[in-house]
Length: 82
Image (cartoon, rainbow, N blue to C red; front, side, top):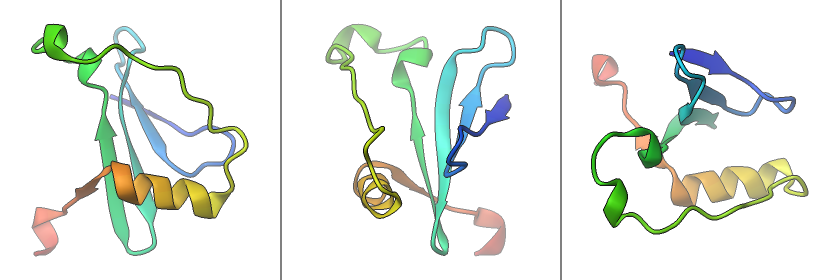
């Protein structure tokens, strides 16, 4: 897995080291981590997924971005610190 950060450096995007496909992303927001996975990168269940949609977050400010991620991404738990 390769971690990549775009210009705003607000999240680590996880890329397959073999093919370069986006696998998911992880972001630190305050004291919490949130993550998202690209289910299209998985081998199972693709036929039952809705079609992909194009999105553009270029005009999003940091507060709006963090709020969207908190609402739509999954919290990441560090089981080693529980």
